[in-house]
Image (cartoon, rainbow, N blue to C red; front, side, top):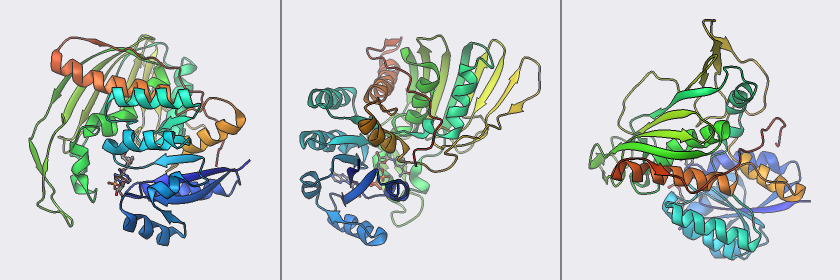
Length: 360
Ligand SMILES: NC(=O)c1ccc[n+]([C@@H]2O[C@H](COP(=O)([O-])OP(=O)(O)OC[C@H]3O[C@@H](n4cnc5c(N)ncnc54)[C@H](O)[C@@H]3O)[C@@H](O)[C@H]2O)c1
């Protein structure tokens, strides 16, 4: 069975997806019908670059595409997502699922009532790095994990993104834009969060783009840019996650997990591969050497898994429940920082099934 696919949003992240979708297309299990963007000229440029078909959003939604990949910025995710589901098509969205939990919930409920699949990035937890971490944790290598840290800290996207304004608007910021990777990996490893406490600061009210075509442009900051969340996982671990756009350099591991029998260090969850190390009690560091697929850019893996899951009639790994739970954790983090004390989560989710086979 061949599933037909369309893409809305042909900006900065588009080529990373497209290369893998074209690779996956060779299996014959999916076929790209066309790409669309609110800016038709942008869609046409990408169509010429990759030898694919550009359409308007309405043309794509009226086309034979059965699944739509939404690569628009966060504030557009809900409106585009509702249109896609309204057109009777399965939806896979870039992260976060929506800018607010209420919008995410509406997407999930709409998809469920319509009998449509809803999947969401990030899919990096399906890569070799996170799958190795999870296998080691599940095997009890460091015993029950009690505590740990996650760190995402840099100086924001002003240095590399061609149009970084959206990163300082609701739906983005360091927590919703990158902390979402750490949270998704943590839920994959330990299951759902039951409560969160937090501190959040908007360190600067305005940012200035330092280089490129927009150098000197002032960006209003409407989000917290340094966020520290204390995450209480229902299965036991207490993890502190720091997400920041205010730090020039640091020397922390992306993840450190402390168990009864040892310590495990995990790689950058914004990437698919990376070094995994652990030790037992006073023993030396050991490095994982097992061979797993997807060490480098495999963006689109979660989408391909969802497409395969439709024909195989099984749950897909980047599930709506997982993404909605992570969205609620992020919103609750900001709420906890605002009001003080702990915020209890209303959602839960299953840990996604491990991935040990190649999907493309
Ligand atoms: N850039 C990255 O490195 C990166 C990495 C991982 C994930 N993401 C995620 O991918 C998504 C897109 O990011 P990006 O960096 O490609 O953004 P971008 O601004 O470069 O591109 C977004 C595209 O969407 C189009 N668009 C905006 N609103 C639209 C609407 N309502 N209807 C149709 N088209 C619309 C814009 O014209 C633009 O071409 C975001 O959710 C982001 O978090 C980006």
